[in-house]
Image (cartoon, rainbow, N blue to C red; front, side, top):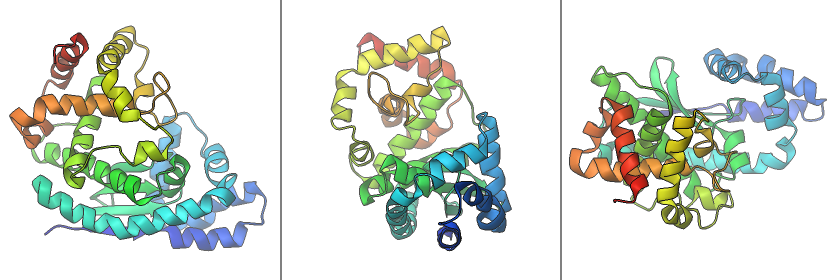
Length: 294
C-alpha cells in the first residue's frame, strides 16, 4: 500500500528559536531564511513565491504572523505538531481504504510565511501537503478534532489532483472551480472521518452554530455567491478564513459540500473528480439551489 512520509522541520525551528528568542525581531526574521530554512530550499521557494503572488513582502508576513505573536503561539504550535505526528499516517491509511487510491505523498510540518494551515502541492517530485504550524495555531485548529479535519480535507485535495492527473485532465481556476474543488475536499473529509463536517474547526474558531446558520441561509448564500460572480466582486470572502459573509467564515465550503450532495450519489466520487465543463455545470446546480427548488 502507498503511504505518506512525514517530513518534520519543527525540531529545527525550535532549535533556531531558542538561539534567537532574545534577539530583535528583525534578526529573527532574517534568521528564518538564513538559518532555519536553509536545509529546505524548495520549501522556502514555494513560500516566497506564494507571498509574491499575493503582493506581500515575506519579511512583513514573518514579522506579523510568526515572530511578534510567537511567545503566545508557541504552545498551540507544539500541540498542533504533536497531533499532526499522531494523526497524519493513520488518517492517510484510512483515506486510501475508503476513497480507493494508491499514491505516495509527503506531509511537511513547518513554520512559515505561506499563511495556509494546509497546502496541497508537490514536493521533491511527489504529491505533498504543507502544514503551516503558525497558521494552524493562529486559527485555533491545533486540537485533535480540527487537526483531523485539516488533514482529511487536504488529502481530499490531493486525491482530486491525483485522479485528474491520471486521466490527463487539467485543474481549473476561478470562482466556480474553487467552489467545486472545496466542495470535493469537504466531501472527502466527511467520508474519511465518517462524521459530520466542520464540527471541530469552526467551533475552535469561535463560530458556534455555524453549520445550522448556513443550512438556514443556504438559498441566500447561493444567491449571494452568484451575485458576486456576476458583479465581478470576487468570492474570496466565501473561502478566506479572515473574511466573513454576514459574519460567518468559510461559507463557500458549505456551499461546495451542498453541490457534492447533488453530484456524488448519482455519479460517484471519481466521476465527479473528473468532471468537465465545470463552470457551467456547477453554476446550473447553484442556480437550482438559489431558487429553493431542492
